[in-house]
Length: 171
Length: 255
Image 1 (tube, rainbow over the protein chains, first blue to last red):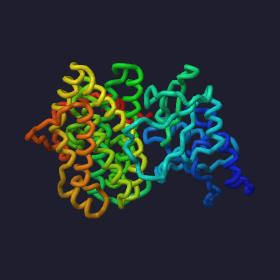
Image 2: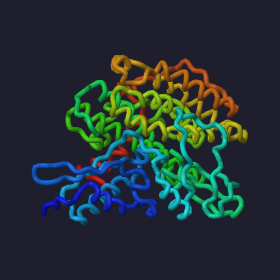
Image 3: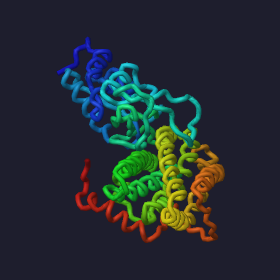
Image 4: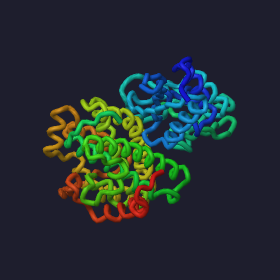
């Protein structure tokens, strides 16, 4: 089957807008900033869709699944020639997370990341800035551990509503 | 990974950095389900996972620059002990939690300025890996420092143990700042980080942490060496036997 000529990068992008992160299924890979580019390259035997993704953390185990999900979604939509490329640079940052993604995270019960300063990386020595509880909105929260169920999250507790919650770390 | 340019010096450098990350990752994985508390189990496995990811990227790049078609798995699982180029400090046995955290502090305090410097490496692929690693190592340092301070400035028992762990691993730090022909050439080309520039920054971070932890900076004249040339302590062989066993028993096995 050949790819219909009407199919463009924009069509592929619409398909990929439905692909979600396997660890945090309320976010699409676009919300997360993992999806970097979608383009169509002209090859001798038809058009090839090239999707560029970038990992959140170097060891993120979800990357293999994300690559497979991207390929499956595009093939199901009729794109026969698909290539998924992984790039490390520029390094992923939570600043790429969309506002829509931040809202969805909060509604899902995960405190979204704050914006990272653009300056050089500093070793944090004191307390980190307060993270608002995604359940009740209180700023009276405490970090339980800097590492949690996935590389990108830390674990917190709200002192007001007493609920524990995950925080997506600014990275 | 783009590239495809054969470059023996860069291949060696990437193996050294990649083996540091791989071997330390394997060591930390030994804490799985054995940490003093659940949150710590999760934390150490997250650190191990970051290091494993860095190792995968570095070994893939090493294979690319070597130009003999070896994959990350070939390099991790099919090399012998004397082919590993990690510094000996990462292969030492974990010991107790105090010693593990003392090593984490010493290694992370070195890794952070190293990766910061490598973000401006003239090798774009290496700079790309560094751009990711630097953010991860920032957390590793923060985590290790917090524990060393808590243990050192804790009870008499925790202070004694973390001091003992620090004394045990301290001599091995000198290897992190060694230089040789490969490194000198790469520093001149702007590919590698100059160890002479990293060491004072490492020392300032470590001194600051140890002072807050009420720990004593060990004094030693013993300078173990050889890891960067494939000479290792007895500990590495046992680690590799466990790490490589599955892959060697089932050749070609993949995730």
